[in-house]
Image 1 (cartoon, helix red, strand yellow):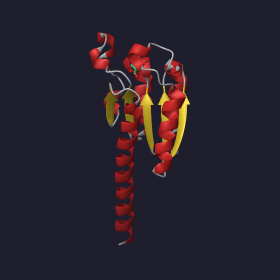
Image 2: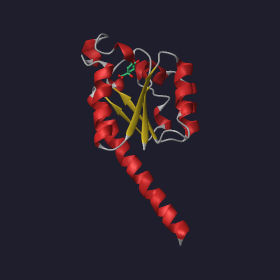
Image 3: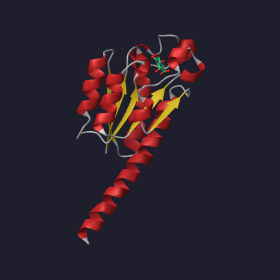
Length: 158
Ligand code: DQA
């Protein structure tokens, strides 16, 4: 089973940008922890970061037929991008949205997520640990998918 992690604009600046909001941890360190978790649980994992909306749409589309789960932090595009929402909705792959900060505690324009309604769930406000929680949640979803596939295969045999 394969998980693709997609990171939106300015998340390449974690550890430098607004540390009072996002903390000191760099994106590569978050990804190293996620990779370790994936390896421990026999999961394949790939990482992608872009500051461009269209590239994020492309990467979501590429997941079709390739990935079993998506973990995405669309960053500022969360609040603006119908295109990313439509891409998530189109590929029909279980997706978990992550935000380091609690977007509901911040400026009003961050209170709306256009992408969350087409995701299996959203984790916000837990800092980098939110990505670990997303990995745990995704593992559970993928286990359920696997069990359903096995049950369907058995039913077809009978
Ligand atoms: C963010 C929250 C967004 O509102 C913001 O634009 C980001 C990061 C977060 O992880 O807390 O860039 O997605």
